[in-house]
Image (cartoon, rainbow, N blue to C red):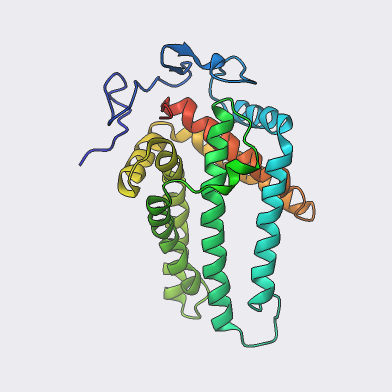
Length: 265
């Protein structure tokens, strides 16, 4: 089964409801209208660079910071509650079972929030200003959850192996961890395709791999840039993440739309 996204055939249909994928740097047009006229707050289309992605995200965030900061803060508070309630802050007690529960609840909470973050990021790129209501509705959560399970498998396998006393197991764990990073990089548009194009998890994964491979250089630079921004946010007592997480979400959604030209239904 071929991927719905084929960078070698930009002029053809790529699944039901798809329009032509513009080539890199070409402005995106929807329904015959220019991208810059598709909603309030739009600006002229920019060619793709990591700096343009961050600049676009910063401008959109500045215009609508309250819901983003509020929901990101809620996410952080709930993570703290889960960690505290399951013994994650207790370094002396034997909390292996509780830590496993903490890891599961953290993964589930992250998946729930990432679903609404993805919707809000796409809304910003579409020229909307998502309010708090936008952050309370899940979309296509079945395929989204399946994708989240698949994306988490390598990381779950890698963690115990990296810490193993056996040198061979530790080496295998490191290889798995590196493989997990590569897979995460190639599949980073999976959630966007699921939300934006109503794809199944397997189709979205194939589309993400093809899309990222067609733009591997620019996307690698953007991924490193956003990771560095989030590290800086974390260093500011974690408070900077209230800004850097929304920036990363919006910038990623803009990169996805700019490089694939996918049109929201």
